Length: 619
Image (cartoon, rainbow, N blue to C red; front, side, top):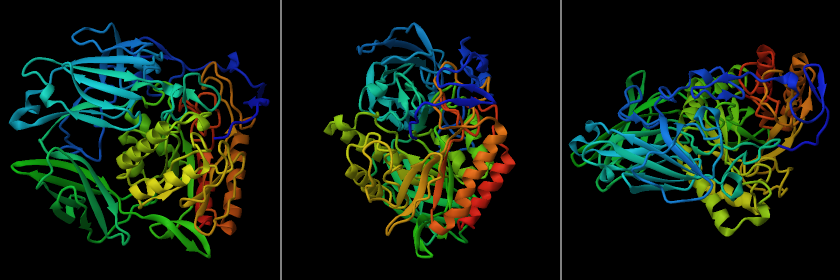
C-alpha cells in the first residue's frame, strides 16, 4: 500500500485539510465488559464478556474427535496480568494484580488493558478434568498465536518457548501437572513490535498513516485437550494434478515408529474414498466421482482419520476441497488457471483489523462478516494483507468460497539496509513456519513473501524466498514481490509465478511475460469518511477523496470497468482493490472501520465485479 502526499480531503460534502479528524466526526462509542469505553464500537463489541470470549472450537481442520463434538477445554477468559518495561524472571505462586481478557491483544479495549507494554506476564489457575489424564492420556496446552515471543510454564516448569507472533504452538504438559488440585499456568511475553527486526506486519508503537496500533500478547485462543501419547499434530490434504485424489500428509506428536494412519473421505455422510498406510508418509486417497472446489461452488469433502500406535488410537476429523491453481498459456499469454480454466482473481485488500479487538475479531460472527461481505460484493478473491489470521478465518474462506492471496507479515519498514544475518534467518524461518501451518487450507491459492520491498534486504531476496516457498509448497502460486514498481528496494526479481504492480488510483494493467502471469496487486483506494464511524484522533491518509456515496459508487464502477474493458486484450489475471473496510486513518474501505455502514451500493458493485470476472475469461 503506497504512502501518498498530504492533500485536501472531502468528507460527505464537507471539506477538511489533512490532519486530525474534526469534532464533527465524533465516533460511535460503547462501554465494554470492563467498563472501558470503546473508541469505536462494532456491532459485536457489547457481546464480548469474560464468559464468552471466542468460545468456538479454534482448530476446525484437526478436530478431536470431531468438529461437531470436540473434546477440549477453552482457556479464553480472564487471566491475571502484570506489565513491565523491563524483562524480569516470572514469579510463581503469586497472584498478579491486574486482569486481562484473553485472547484480545493488550492494546485493545476488549482486553480490558488498552495499553502497550514490552514485557508482560499472564497467569491462570486451571482445574484439569480428571478424564483428560485417564487411561494414559496426555494433556496438550495449545496457543493459536502470541506476539511476539512467549515462554510458558506449568507449575513452575518451563514447557514451551515460541519465538513467532503469527504461528500456533503447543506443549505436552502432562509431566508438569500436579496429581491433584489446581494447576498454575504462567506465560511470559516479550512484544517489541517494530523496535526490533521481527515480523510485525503493519503494527507500530507509534501508529501513523498506513501503519496501525500494535497488537501484543496472547491474541488467539488458548485451550487444553487430551490426546494419546502418540497423536496427530497436523493433517493436510493436497489435490493431485489429475484432480481425482488427495495426497494426505500427516505430522505426529510422540513416538511415530510403526504408527499407522487410516483416512476415509465422506460426502453427505457417505464414504467416497479411503487410504491407509504408515503415518508420517504421504498417502494417496482416490476420490470416486470427483467434485471440484471453486468460488462458485465451494464444495468440501470431510474426512475421518484414525491414527493407531500400539493399543492407542487418535480419532480426528478434517476437511478439504479438490482444486488446482497454476499458470498456463491462454491465447499465447500466461494466465492464472483455476482447475485448468482461466480465472480472473478479483480481490479486495483485507487487513484484518478491528477497532475493538485490533488483531482479534470480537466474535466468530464478526470474523465471518468481512469474508461474507466480500463474497456478497461479487469478489472471488481476498488478499490477506501482511497478517496471518486464526484458523477459523480460513475455515470461513474455505466454506464461503473465496480464493486467498496470503501475504507474509513484513519486517519493520526503514530497516532494509540494517538487517543482520540473524534477522534474515529469522524471517526465512517464520515464512517457512507460516507456509507449513497454512498449506492445508483450500482457499489459499498463492503466497506473497514481500510487499513493496518492506523488509526486503535486496532484490534477489524475493527470488530466494519464492524458491524457498515453492520447495515447501509446489501446489500453489508464488507472487515473489507485490508491487515491483514500489516502494522500498524497487525492482522486479524476475522470479515466482506472477508479475505484480501497484497503481493508485489505477487500475494497473501489467502484461504477462514469458514465464509469469500478471496482476495489479493494489489499486483504487477511493476515500470517503463517514461522520460518526471513524477512528478518533488520527491523521487521515488520503488516496483519492470523493464527496459522497454516489461519487464513491461511480468511481468504483468506473475504476473496475477499466479491468473489464481493457484487461482481456492484455491478458491480466487479477487485481486487488484497496480495501474492504476502513482501517484507523485510512477511509478507503467499502465498509466503515466499525462495519456499521456499507458505503457502496452492493448491487452495483456486484454487477461490475461479476461482469469483470466474466469478461476476463472466467467460467
